[in-house]
Image 1 (cartoon, rainbow, N blue to C red):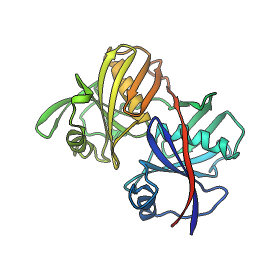
Image 2 (image 1 turned 30 degrees about the horizontal axis):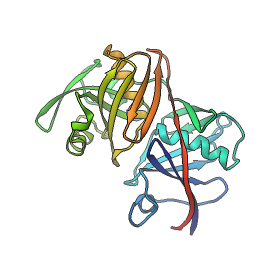
Image 3 (image 1 turned 135 degrees about the vertical axis):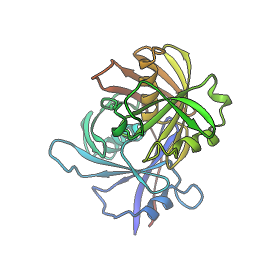
Length: 276
């Protein structure tokens, strides 16, 4: 089977995007792994599927698969690329696009200059909903990771996140500590591990080790989680520039009961056809 795809990225977090509205395909985990393989496939952090809506209340269904073939609930950088893709492919002319995900409905607003604003919904802190093993909800948790006790903010942005503040993200051995935290037994569905350096109240540096992928150049939900945690701890203001290895995102949160708003760039790299 020949499958058309588009390679895209959002601040360096890269995707293979597949239109399953105008073409039909059934992709298995091994097909996802082949597409994501950087040596034998196209190469990406995640594969994004554009599907018809399952409800008249939304415009599209959006599915996300990590490079290891596992389906996940949410991807903020992918959501921005999704919005640009459906407009570029003339699947919609809307600038406000409602999308069904495994984590619920999100709303995407396409701005000028390839910037996309995403309403990421409200953060979730209840440990059982993250999920995270803890006797009760708290602003932060002490967790032993490979013999080192880390103070973590734990929350869900549609997918599970743990955030730890560090003095210098550049000095971090992220491959080691991220791998240990990602698979920590207190996170039964694994976790995206973010490490945040506070530069000012309006700016942070962030590196994220994503579950099923490893370190990525950007993580939209990770940026949201870091800013939310920083606000709860009193370190950050309500609008923050997040510096990631692949670029910058703007994250805003007005506080409890309010959605997190993410704005950032998108780019199309190339298009092609691959045999699956």
